[in-house]
Amino acid sequence: MQQLLPSDDDEHQDGDNRRGNLAVLVVAVVVVVAGVWLVNKLVDMRNMQNCLESGRTNCVPINPRAR
Image: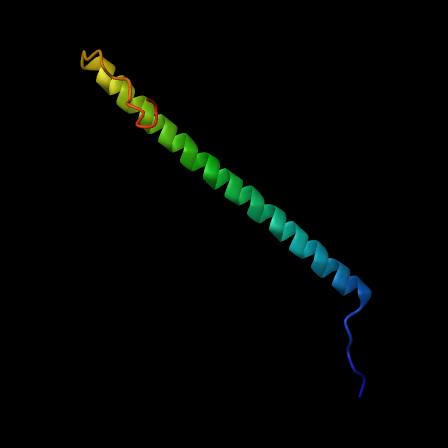
């Protein structure tokens, strides 16, 4: 009976697949992080606009770290 051993091409292709999958994962994580940041920024801007449209003049958020 002949034993099937993985060839060098199979190992090279597996390495390429892993590298490609890792690249796709990194891109997906970057897109998700950028999307969360953008949504938070848009919510902050919407809240500021709602405050200003209601006629208030003290709409600047308070930064607890600033002294």
